[in-house]
Length: 226
Image: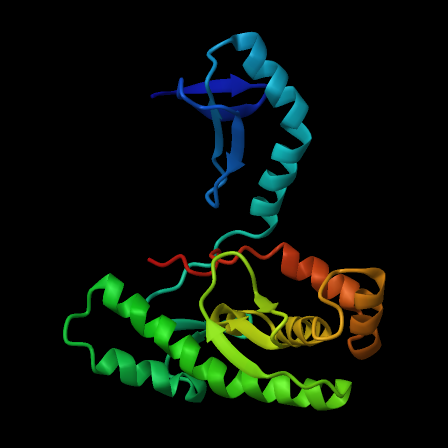
């Protein structure tokens, strides 16, 4: 494997050459670095590939620019409902207790305290929102679970089990409610058909705008810390 920096127009690209790769891959990291992985060192091949994917690359970089990572001062701040707050707020009492009981205040242990806090808070706040909308929508679920997930805000399976990402508590309340309605709607439609979106729209106004905002939020953009 060989890594080098190449230039494409005004962009700086990290090119990783690996002979055993079957396909070429382009990604944009959360710190706005463009990574290209190929099994070829051909300048013509690389430039052709970059020209083909240039629009997508710039779109991802623009998202990074509009949605920079939120940096949290660990032990001093907490991201809750879309706002950075002091850990002294009433809602962060559980977090303060976790932090005060730490024997070894390493970064890993502190982050674990935050994860445990979000999970505990989720059990109370998110359960209330699911109960509220399940009654409004007249839909019954079998079980509600909470889990920190890497690639989705929530899920609903054919057994009528709804799982919500504990990181939802970092979103604004209106965005949280949208996800709740979205997952409840899957109890009726296990897809994203027109009928599904019609059902969501019937119980959540301005769903298109909020859905777009949520899609632009990166799941781990709020986990960065100093």
